[in-house]
Length: 191
Image 1 (spheres, helix red, strand yellow):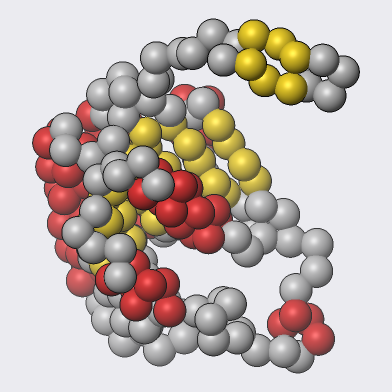
Image 2 (image 1 turned 90 degrees about the vertical axis):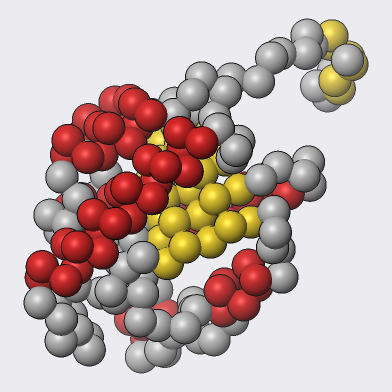
């Protein structure tokens, strides 16, 4: 394969697929969006993808409608009971924990099935940070993937352990946000 690097052409050897652990974290926007961008890219190669969304549960996001159009190659599960302890949350913590536990079991099942080259665990970092998912469960999920499987984990507050284990970590950093100017979340852009 020939690749142009600006000052000439270089030969690049084709490499066998190597599964990666990818983490999108930080206090800025764009973590789920980055993961969904990877999802769209993988669809270009007809990959089967499993997306499991932790924490997000009660709100209706535009991405849900968009992902519906990508079925059957994209299998999406929203297992959360909504945002924990904020906004309109009226559920007991144990309800959130039970939903997260079901999400962990589902993630392990989907990863171990070998049917999905790409598994995205959206907001799993938040679920760990809130105590809905234990560190041991996170470690079990990471250990379950095969050497050719891509696992993407999103959400604020990635643990030091997860960052150390990951092959790629991108931290989204908030520099400026429309909310600071009194502009609320926008349909089609934020939700």
